[in-house]
Image 1 (cartoon, rainbow, N blue to C red):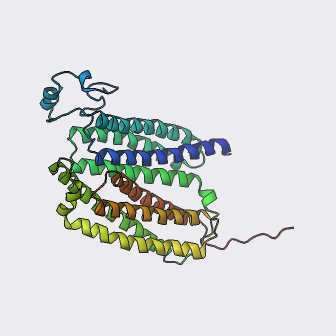
Image 2 (image 1 turned 45 degrees about the horizontal axis):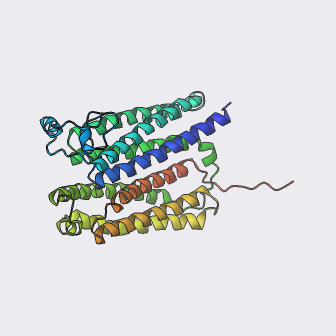
Length: 330
Protein backbone atom coordinates (compact mmCIF):
# COMPACT_ATOMS: atom_id res chain seq x y z
CA UNK A 1 0.00 0.00 0.00
CA UNK A 2 1.23 3.50 -0.87
CA UNK A 3 2.65 5.53 2.00
CA UNK A 4 0.44 8.65 1.99
CA UNK A 5 3.00 10.86 3.70
CA UNK A 6 5.77 9.76 1.34
CA UNK A 7 3.53 10.43 -1.67
CA UNK A 8 2.70 13.88 -0.30
CA UNK A 9 6.40 14.59 0.24
CA UNK A 10 7.17 13.57 -3.35
CA UNK A 11 4.43 15.83 -4.71
CA UNK A 12 5.64 18.80 -2.67
CA UNK A 13 9.27 18.28 -3.65
CA UNK A 14 8.35 17.90 -7.30
CA UNK A 15 6.17 21.00 -7.26
CA UNK A 16 8.90 23.01 -5.51
CA UNK A 17 11.38 21.81 -8.14
CA UNK A 18 9.06 22.93 -10.95
CA UNK A 19 8.81 26.43 -9.46
CA UNK A 20 12.59 26.46 -8.95
CA UNK A 21 13.16 25.66 -12.64
CA UNK A 22 10.83 28.50 -13.60
CA UNK A 23 12.76 30.76 -11.23
CA UNK A 24 16.07 29.89 -12.88
CA UNK A 25 14.45 30.65 -16.25
CA UNK A 26 13.55 34.07 -14.86
CA UNK A 27 17.07 34.61 -13.51
CA UNK A 28 18.52 33.43 -16.83
CA UNK A 29 16.33 35.99 -18.59
CA UNK A 30 17.66 38.69 -16.27
CA UNK A 31 21.22 37.57 -17.04
CA UNK A 32 20.58 37.79 -20.74
CA UNK A 33 18.68 41.08 -20.65
CA UNK A 34 21.35 42.77 -18.54
CA UNK A 35 24.23 41.46 -20.66
CA UNK A 36 25.64 39.63 -17.63
CA UNK A 37 26.17 36.32 -19.41
CA UNK A 38 29.94 36.79 -19.39
CA UNK A 39 29.96 38.25 -15.89
CA UNK A 40 31.82 35.05 -15.05
CA UNK A 41 34.08 34.24 -18.03
CA UNK A 42 35.00 30.78 -16.73
CA UNK A 43 33.10 27.79 -15.36
CA UNK A 44 32.51 26.33 -12.79
CA UNK A 45 34.62 28.96 -11.00
CA UNK A 46 34.12 32.70 -11.53
CA UNK A 47 37.30 34.59 -12.31
CA UNK A 48 39.10 31.54 -10.99
CA UNK A 49 37.36 31.70 -7.60
CA UNK A 50 34.52 29.66 -6.10
CA UNK A 51 33.17 32.87 -4.54
CA UNK A 52 33.64 35.70 -7.04
CA UNK A 53 35.36 38.97 -6.12
CA UNK A 54 33.47 42.12 -5.30
CA UNK A 55 36.17 44.54 -6.44
CA UNK A 56 38.51 44.61 -9.42
CA UNK A 57 41.47 45.01 -7.04
CA UNK A 58 40.91 41.40 -5.94
CA UNK A 59 41.84 40.17 -9.42
CA UNK A 60 45.32 39.80 -10.90
CA UNK A 61 46.56 43.02 -12.50
CA UNK A 62 46.88 41.25 -15.86
CA UNK A 63 43.51 39.47 -15.80
CA UNK A 64 42.59 41.14 -19.12
CA UNK A 65 45.51 39.39 -20.83
CA UNK A 66 44.81 36.09 -19.06
CA UNK A 67 41.27 35.86 -20.38
CA UNK A 68 42.19 37.25 -23.78
CA UNK A 69 44.53 34.27 -24.19
CA UNK A 70 41.59 31.98 -23.35
CA UNK A 71 39.53 33.49 -26.15
CA UNK A 72 37.56 36.05 -24.12
CA UNK A 73 38.69 39.41 -25.40
CA UNK A 74 37.60 42.66 -23.76
CA UNK A 75 36.84 40.94 -20.46
CA UNK A 76 35.97 43.68 -18.02
CA UNK A 77 35.08 43.00 -14.40
CA UNK A 78 31.70 44.37 -13.41
CA UNK A 79 30.57 43.39 -9.88
CA UNK A 80 26.85 43.66 -10.68
CA UNK A 81 27.08 41.49 -13.79
CA UNK A 82 29.44 39.05 -12.09
CA UNK A 83 27.14 38.49 -9.14
CA UNK A 84 24.06 38.34 -11.37
CA UNK A 85 25.61 35.46 -13.31
CA UNK A 86 26.91 33.87 -10.11
CA UNK A 87 23.40 33.97 -8.60
CA UNK A 88 22.14 32.26 -11.74
CA UNK A 89 24.64 29.47 -11.15
CA UNK A 90 23.74 29.14 -7.47
CA UNK A 91 20.05 28.77 -8.36
CA UNK A 92 21.02 26.10 -10.89
CA UNK A 93 22.95 24.18 -8.22
CA UNK A 94 19.96 24.42 -5.89
CA UNK A 95 17.77 22.86 -8.56
CA UNK A 96 20.29 20.03 -8.80
CA UNK A 97 19.77 19.25 -5.11
CA UNK A 98 15.99 19.56 -5.39
CA UNK A 99 15.75 17.29 -8.41
CA UNK A 100 17.96 14.72 -6.65
CA UNK A 101 15.64 14.75 -3.63
CA UNK A 102 12.63 14.45 -5.95
CA UNK A 103 14.17 11.46 -7.73
CA UNK A 104 15.09 9.86 -4.41
CA UNK A 105 11.60 10.30 -2.96
CA UNK A 106 10.03 8.85 -6.13
CA UNK A 107 11.36 5.37 -5.28
CA UNK A 108 8.11 4.74 -3.39
CA UNK A 109 6.43 4.31 -6.79
CA UNK A 110 8.66 1.40 -7.82
CA UNK A 111 5.96 -1.05 -6.73
CA UNK A 112 2.92 0.86 -7.98
CA UNK A 113 4.06 2.88 -11.01
CA UNK A 114 7.69 2.45 -12.04
CA UNK A 115 7.26 5.06 -14.77
CA UNK A 116 7.07 7.82 -12.15
CA UNK A 117 10.43 6.72 -10.73
CA UNK A 118 12.14 6.44 -14.11
CA UNK A 119 10.78 9.81 -15.25
CA UNK A 120 12.06 11.44 -12.06
CA UNK A 121 15.44 9.82 -12.59
CA UNK A 122 15.50 11.01 -16.20
CA UNK A 123 14.77 14.56 -15.05
CA UNK A 124 17.70 14.32 -12.62
CA UNK A 125 20.11 13.33 -15.38
CA UNK A 126 18.71 16.00 -17.71
CA UNK A 127 19.37 18.67 -15.07
CA UNK A 128 22.95 17.43 -14.91
CA UNK A 129 23.18 17.68 -18.69
CA UNK A 130 21.66 21.16 -18.47
CA UNK A 131 24.48 22.16 -16.11
CA UNK A 132 27.05 20.89 -18.62
CA UNK A 133 25.24 22.73 -21.41
CA UNK A 134 25.43 25.90 -19.32
CA UNK A 135 29.21 25.54 -19.17
CA UNK A 136 29.22 25.08 -22.94
CA UNK A 137 27.24 28.29 -23.34
CA UNK A 138 29.98 30.16 -21.45
CA UNK A 139 32.73 28.37 -23.40
CA UNK A 140 31.05 29.36 -26.69
CA UNK A 141 31.20 33.01 -25.64
CA UNK A 142 27.38 33.16 -25.55
CA UNK A 143 26.59 31.94 -29.06
CA UNK A 144 22.85 32.55 -29.63
CA UNK A 145 22.17 28.98 -30.77
CA UNK A 146 23.68 27.60 -27.56
CA UNK A 147 21.60 29.99 -25.42
CA UNK A 148 18.47 28.89 -27.31
CA UNK A 149 19.23 25.20 -26.77
CA UNK A 150 19.83 25.90 -23.09
CA UNK A 151 16.41 27.53 -22.80
CA UNK A 152 14.55 24.84 -24.78
CA UNK A 153 16.03 22.11 -22.60
CA UNK A 154 14.78 23.94 -19.51
CA UNK A 155 11.32 24.00 -21.11
CA UNK A 156 11.50 20.25 -21.73
CA UNK A 157 12.65 19.55 -18.15
CA UNK A 158 9.69 21.50 -16.77
CA UNK A 159 7.26 19.59 -19.02
CA UNK A 160 8.78 16.29 -17.89
CA UNK A 161 8.43 17.25 -14.22
CA UNK A 162 4.84 18.43 -14.70
CA UNK A 163 3.92 15.13 -16.34
CA UNK A 164 5.70 13.13 -13.64
CA UNK A 165 3.93 14.89 -10.76
CA UNK A 166 0.56 14.76 -12.54
CA UNK A 167 1.00 11.04 -13.25
CA UNK A 168 1.65 10.39 -9.57
CA UNK A 169 -1.71 12.11 -8.85
CA UNK A 170 -3.73 10.54 -11.65
CA UNK A 171 -6.22 8.94 -9.25
CA UNK A 172 -7.15 12.41 -8.02
CA UNK A 173 -7.13 13.92 -11.52
CA UNK A 174 -9.27 11.02 -12.73
CA UNK A 175 -12.16 12.30 -10.58
CA UNK A 176 -12.36 15.57 -12.55
CA UNK A 177 -15.55 15.68 -14.61
CA UNK A 178 -14.90 16.85 -18.19
CA UNK A 179 -17.87 15.27 -19.96
CA UNK A 180 -19.38 18.71 -20.70
CA UNK A 181 -16.42 19.89 -22.78
CA UNK A 182 -16.88 19.76 -26.58
CA UNK A 183 -15.25 16.90 -28.49
CA UNK A 184 -12.92 19.28 -30.32
CA UNK A 185 -11.61 20.83 -27.10
CA UNK A 186 -8.59 18.51 -26.93
CA UNK A 187 -7.73 19.18 -30.58
CA UNK A 188 -7.90 22.96 -30.09
CA UNK A 189 -5.74 22.63 -26.96
CA UNK A 190 -3.10 20.71 -28.93
CA UNK A 191 -3.17 23.42 -31.60
CA UNK A 192 -2.81 26.07 -28.88
CA UNK A 193 0.23 24.26 -27.45
CA UNK A 194 1.80 24.04 -30.91
CA UNK A 195 1.14 27.74 -31.45
CA UNK A 196 2.85 28.56 -28.17
CA UNK A 197 5.94 26.59 -29.19
CA UNK A 198 5.99 28.37 -32.55
CA UNK A 199 5.66 31.69 -30.75
CA UNK A 200 8.53 30.77 -28.42
CA UNK A 201 10.66 29.80 -31.43
CA UNK A 202 9.92 33.12 -33.14
CA UNK A 203 10.59 34.94 -29.89
CA UNK A 204 13.95 33.21 -29.70
CA UNK A 205 14.81 34.48 -33.16
CA UNK A 206 13.79 37.99 -32.14
CA UNK A 207 15.84 37.61 -28.96
CA UNK A 208 18.94 36.61 -30.94
CA UNK A 209 18.49 39.65 -33.20
CA UNK A 210 18.08 41.90 -30.16
CA UNK A 211 21.29 40.46 -28.72
CA UNK A 212 23.11 41.47 -31.90
CA UNK A 213 21.50 44.93 -31.86
CA UNK A 214 22.42 45.36 -28.19
CA UNK A 215 26.03 44.57 -28.98
CA UNK A 216 26.03 47.00 -31.89
CA UNK A 217 24.66 49.76 -29.65
CA UNK A 218 26.98 48.83 -26.76
CA UNK A 219 23.90 48.09 -24.60
CA UNK A 220 22.77 51.75 -24.66
CA UNK A 221 20.29 53.83 -26.70
CA UNK A 222 17.54 51.25 -26.21
CA UNK A 223 14.95 53.58 -27.72
CA UNK A 224 16.61 53.15 -31.13
CA UNK A 225 16.85 49.35 -31.14
CA UNK A 226 13.33 48.90 -32.53
CA UNK A 227 14.37 50.56 -35.80
CA UNK A 228 16.56 47.55 -36.60
CA UNK A 229 14.04 44.81 -35.72
CA UNK A 230 13.54 42.11 -38.42
CA UNK A 231 10.21 41.22 -40.04
CA UNK A 232 9.83 38.20 -37.75
CA UNK A 233 9.35 40.61 -34.85
CA UNK A 234 6.15 41.93 -36.43
CA UNK A 235 4.96 38.40 -37.19
CA UNK A 236 5.69 37.44 -33.60
CA UNK A 237 3.76 40.46 -32.34
CA UNK A 238 0.70 39.84 -34.53
CA UNK A 239 0.65 36.11 -33.79
CA UNK A 240 0.07 36.88 -30.09
CA UNK A 241 -3.50 38.01 -30.85
CA UNK A 242 -4.29 34.64 -32.46
CA UNK A 243 -2.87 32.86 -29.43
CA UNK A 244 -4.94 35.06 -27.11
CA UNK A 245 -8.27 34.38 -28.86
CA UNK A 246 -7.56 30.65 -29.18
CA UNK A 247 -6.91 30.33 -25.45
CA UNK A 248 -9.88 32.55 -24.62
CA UNK A 249 -12.06 30.03 -26.46
CA UNK A 250 -10.56 27.20 -24.39
CA UNK A 251 -11.14 28.98 -21.10
CA UNK A 252 -14.66 30.00 -22.12
CA UNK A 253 -15.54 26.36 -22.79
CA UNK A 254 -14.08 25.38 -19.42
CA UNK A 255 -16.11 28.12 -17.75
CA UNK A 256 -19.32 26.94 -19.44
CA UNK A 257 -18.78 23.21 -18.92
CA UNK A 258 -16.77 22.55 -15.74
CA UNK A 259 -17.56 22.95 -12.04
CA UNK A 260 -16.47 26.36 -10.73
CA UNK A 261 -14.33 24.79 -8.00
CA UNK A 262 -12.55 22.45 -10.38
CA UNK A 263 -8.78 22.62 -10.78
CA UNK A 264 -9.45 23.03 -14.51
CA UNK A 265 -11.26 26.30 -13.83
CA UNK A 266 -8.42 27.68 -11.72
CA UNK A 267 -5.89 26.56 -14.32
CA UNK A 268 -7.87 28.20 -17.11
CA UNK A 269 -7.99 31.54 -15.32
CA UNK A 270 -4.26 31.28 -14.61
CA UNK A 271 -3.66 30.66 -18.33
CA UNK A 272 -5.46 33.84 -19.39
CA UNK A 273 -3.66 35.84 -16.71
CA UNK A 274 -0.30 34.61 -17.95
CA UNK A 275 -1.12 35.39 -21.58
CA UNK A 276 -2.31 38.89 -20.66
CA UNK A 277 0.88 39.50 -18.68
CA UNK A 278 3.02 38.24 -21.58
CA UNK A 279 1.24 40.56 -24.01
CA UNK A 280 1.60 43.55 -21.67
CA UNK A 281 5.32 42.78 -21.27
CA UNK A 282 5.63 42.50 -25.05
CA UNK A 283 3.89 45.85 -25.59
CA UNK A 284 6.20 47.38 -23.00
CA UNK A 285 9.23 46.07 -24.88
CA UNK A 286 7.85 47.36 -28.16
CA UNK A 287 6.74 50.81 -27.07
CA UNK A 288 8.93 51.76 -24.12
CA UNK A 289 12.40 51.27 -25.56
CA UNK A 290 13.07 47.63 -24.54
CA UNK A 291 13.28 48.13 -20.73
CA UNK A 292 15.44 45.34 -19.26
CA UNK A 293 12.86 44.41 -16.60
CA UNK A 294 10.25 43.48 -19.24
CA UNK A 295 12.45 41.02 -21.14
CA UNK A 296 12.80 38.29 -18.46
CA UNK A 297 9.11 38.66 -17.54
CA UNK A 298 8.11 38.15 -21.18
CA UNK A 299 10.32 35.06 -21.41
CA UNK A 300 9.04 33.60 -18.14
CA UNK A 301 5.39 34.09 -19.14
CA UNK A 302 5.95 32.24 -22.42
CA UNK A 303 7.39 29.26 -20.54
CA UNK A 304 4.62 29.33 -17.94
CA UNK A 305 1.93 29.47 -20.64
CA UNK A 306 3.19 26.28 -22.24
CA UNK A 307 3.51 24.60 -18.84
CA UNK A 308 -0.11 25.43 -17.93
CA UNK A 309 -1.38 24.29 -21.33
CA UNK A 310 0.54 21.06 -20.96
CA UNK A 311 -0.94 20.52 -17.49
CA UNK A 312 -4.44 21.05 -18.93
CA UNK A 313 -3.71 18.43 -21.57
CA UNK A 314 -2.58 15.93 -18.92
CA UNK A 315 -5.71 16.62 -16.89
CA UNK A 316 -7.85 15.89 -19.96
CA UNK A 317 -5.96 12.65 -20.53
CA UNK A 318 -6.60 11.37 -16.99
CA UNK A 319 -9.96 13.00 -16.21
CA UNK A 320 -13.33 11.29 -16.52
CA UNK A 321 -15.34 12.08 -19.63
CA UNK A 322 -18.48 10.57 -18.12
CA UNK A 323 -20.95 12.42 -15.91
CA UNK A 324 -20.21 12.16 -12.20
CA UNK A 325 -23.22 10.61 -10.45
CA UNK A 326 -23.78 12.01 -6.97
CA UNK A 327 -24.85 9.44 -4.40
CA UNK A 328 -27.97 10.40 -2.41
CA UNK A 329 -27.60 10.99 1.29
CA UNK A 330 -28.86 8.12 3.38
